[in-house]
Image 1 (cartoon, rainbow, N blue to C red):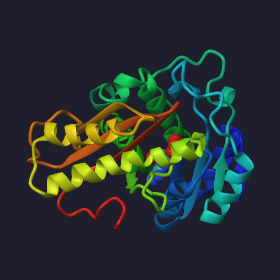
Image 2: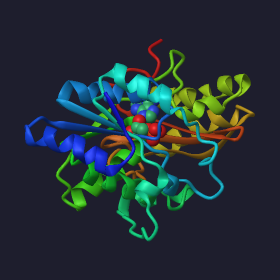
Image 3: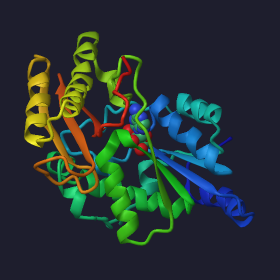
Length: 289
Ligand code: AMP
């Protein structure tokens, strides 16, 4: 497996692969890789002859008061993990390589990017869509893999690809959780032991909404109240949002009469965590008890 840092090196490595007709899979990440990321890489390897992983802590998707400078950076470990998971190349550019002096473009898909995370993290999705479009163009991959952990991001990327006719297939991959049900996240390492226990409130809130729905409650407001009550009972937690919305547009719905998703953003101490689940009768529980 190769590690490259420049766009030229990346292109020099992928051009012959493309010419030989081998499918290219792309897994964009910000590094500090865990089993959630590795599931994306493994899925890519099942479906593509050549898999590229991008490890880049993208500054333009962080707000001024967010954790860009202290975001975990563990490139040597990441490279080893990528190799074990079957990646063929890791692209780890520095910030100047992606945003050289004079860079000024921004991709803004509007629509689904305006809601929820878009309201709480202004500019975040423009940073995400801009860097993803750059990566799609740099890799010219056939498929790109995104986790359902970042549910809204996945919908935003689908809108980007649909609206701008980008010739790439977006493949969603299910959420990988710790054995106790906490969704894996690079930010979990910010949690001290007490906060780590408190973070299970996200799982608990989603479980509560799911089981209430399965007991016949289809009013989204009631499900949202239920999630908020579960989170409010945890003193270390504070809610950014806890909603049940249309699973595709993420717009408010009064009643669940089409596919819906429960989406949470909760601060545990100083750490902001997100989680979600589809609200359906068929899905297994979040942690199979
Ligand atoms: P990040 O490094 O946080 O930007 O995440 C890179 C990719 O990994 C995104 O598509 C995420 O949705 C995905 N991802 C992160 N955590 C998980 C997880 N626990 N399960 C599945 N996918 C994940």
